[in-house]
Amino acid sequence: MKIISNTITLRSTGGTDIFDITQAVRNEIESTGIREGAVTLFIPGSTAALTTIEYETGVINDLRKAIEKIAPSDIYYEHNERWGDGNGYSHVRAALLGPSLHIPIIRGNMTLGTWQQIVVLDFDNRPRNRKVIVQIVGEK
Image (cartoon, rainbow, N blue to C red; front, top):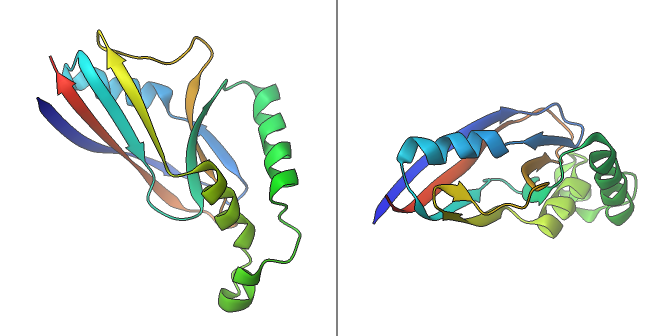
């Protein structure tokens, strides 16, 4: 059994950025030579999340609109009273989607569906440097 850990680094703009990191994760897996196992992805921080979606302009725009309806950026959040940073909505959005993904690797490939990509969503209201922890576990 082999365990390899690495990071993928991103720079966000502060406007609900959505990044497709599928190819970067594929590259990490290929570099290990692992054929059977799993990849776990984790984003440290409480204002960003990970999920899967078809990374296509229409559905990305739909996702942004849905997130805005679920946790609007322009309503009162108690968090803003305590810290004064105006990003209470960012914390709520990230909590709803979650900070991690776990994807099986079979015959050297992630078991994603045909139209399923891995995305990072950065909800913070200011630019951020983000790191996604990539941990690959398995056998060659």
